[in-house]
Length: 148
Image (cartoon, rainbow, N blue to C red):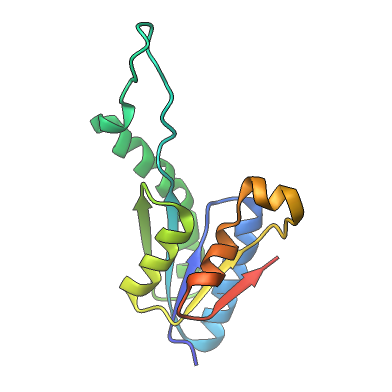
């Protein structure tokens, strides 16, 4: 059935539920697991006293800070997968929107299933906040399992 499962996480409580279900499925299927987290582009708009953009995203500290934050999400997830005896790799995608990073990683890693979570927002809330899960569902060429 599924041999390589991509599990998307942002480290939130809801994403932890998706991780647990994805790992459970991978164990049952003896599938390999890739765990991905995506750091979305830095919001421009920070200014110094003179009104010039700080340009934080162009500093060496920017990438290091983003990587450190990503590893705080990925390392516990990897440990949980390895504790179940699963073959696991982690991926941090920098400066992409979540849906783009997830879909690209699934393609690059040869995933045959994507597991992710959704808050299940509707109406104006969904329009205002967007839905990366809906975007993945609409654009993915492989099956997507959505955990709520």
